[in-house]
Length: 405
Ligand SMILES: [Zn+2]
Image (cartoon, rainbow, N blue to C red; front, side, top):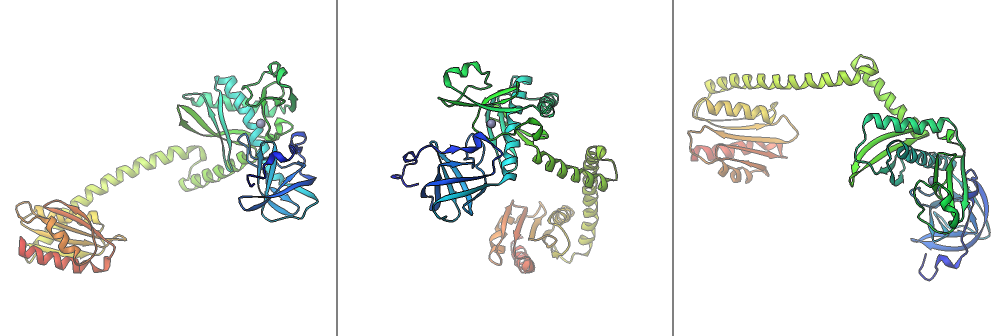
């Protein structure tokens, strides 16, 4: 909205969602057509669209057939930002129910969860954010045990299953002291109170379910430490169902793969990880022994003190093992190319009794093909993207070694 077109030129928009969170279609008069971030925007006399505020995102839907992209509360005036321009006159608005109901489930669930944290652990809610996939709640606690986590969830879901009424009413500022609010109000004047019957009292302008039973289920889904407090992720209603469905499928897949029951999956996975670690250790020991044998063979067949080859199917690690075993068993210099991985690797090694500083071979190889890496006087390891040209680099290194060894 341009600066000279202040929203306060218009009267406050009547918020139909305050009166009925289930109202999905409405008629309104356009009070003004303007622009917001180069998009066509309108101010109406009344709206069922919820504007972003209090941690709850705006509603989706259409207005006069145009898609509603954003809904903003500009100091009491609600601005609807549209994908395309609409004609003037009375307009028909349609709020997307699936998104609205999802927000109602998360938001009502948040009130209950916040009170359950307070009642159970004296944990105060510091902030709330309703995200597109998960919502978060920052609670003033330093740590929570599994048993405490369960107690909070149990209490919150007991309130859901009691199917308590959720009431909304306005209370004048001077009477707000009579309402046992969980948190002191941020606003002044007439306050909108959302009461989960006898359980939680919050000053809130959001959209909520009529009864707690509509939330279905409240589930804490994640935990992280932040600013010395705890931030929980939580899921309500449809989101909790989708999460359960996905986890159930994963659990069944794992149980099938491990040929065990779902309850045994974690134990099986732990055992497999331990077995894997032990096998890796064993494989490494065997590789080392094999490299020692291989080195003996190479040394026996060697025509001179410089041994060089491209090892097509060896990993860089295997090539290094082999080279180190060779240089240990006599006076040798080894240049190996390992082509077994996506990049080409070069290993240049020499026996300790030889004098050449192998770091000097790096620029010699670098003049043939681009390489990265480094090393010390008796071992250099290089990587190149040009795997097909390893032999050229080896030839250059061998020539240098013959002159400088
Ligand atoms: Zn609320």
